[in-house]
Image 1: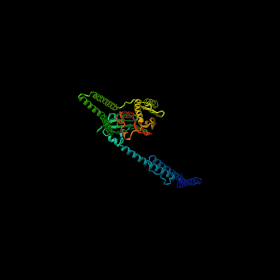
Image 2: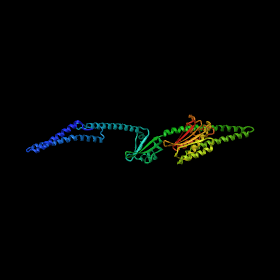
Image 3: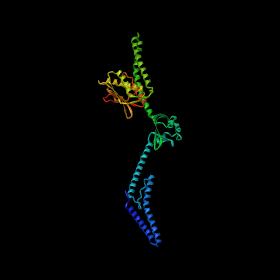
Image 4: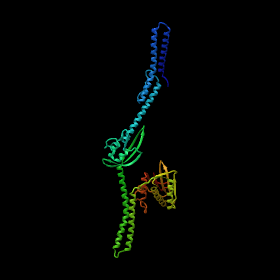
Length: 437
């Protein structure tokens, strides 16, 4: 990239003119009586030097103006190569770079407008908190949800709940909670998530508020419907024979003479059925109380080894395969988690007995995507697809001797740990229970 021809030609002419003028000026000093000529020659030298300087400086000024426009982010400026400024190749490269910068800025501006519109229209309320602006509703959902307060300080949001306002005032670590907000239509439960962000040297907290009262009400009504359905079925199953036996006993005692022996048998059977109904009600009482966790970190290997010993003592004829990845550590309540796995292993052993002749159970613990997966698989016939939605309901059971409490309590314990439990098909068609913590 060098000078263009026009710039070089004009530069050569000015340099030639300057040299000729200097030669004439020097010659005027060698000849006596040319005082006026010396003055004229000196003026010509000065003019030629000024013209040469102006020709070179014009390009410098053009480049300087271009760089100033670049610093000012005026990407519409183009390099002016007219008037002998020269550097046409340089000007073309600079113009191309400027057009690229302008296109990049326009693209960034479009992306920024899209992201701003996306944040503004997202259905979850977003609040931003910083020292300069306080608490600011950052989108439409936040402006609609929080419209009754005055001010930008966290305490101004106390009209929606003191606990919520205190959370806005605490610059803590990332958290997620279910809080109750005081809204015009009544108390509303909402999931509140907060996180600290640092961008361009500024520390900002982002808080999202997602009202979930309607969703929770729907889930609660569905859970109540399922519970009433199961309870009605189980209680009626117990009361039907109780009513029948009571009527039989009354008839036997009213007979002449009273059939005391048969009445005693009927009353004894009635007593057993009443005791079974009492145990069922006790089981319901256990299900209705959420478990209390005592979490602590512990190694998985010795924990699983102890479960294997308990399993072997109860199920001598069912081999248990252990698959535990090295260095797996659990952060859980060991007692409650052991109870969950004991129930799952017992169910798996019973299912294996009802399945094929190859009875076996597998227990595995592994790290997957930063979480701990616990799997219990059996060689049974599996759980039908249409029953998988119901097996975690309280008192739902497919076994005559079952209570339908174990899997529901297992789910309660896992959910209390912040995890999930699900059922899938095993590798050989049996049931595969998977807990993710």
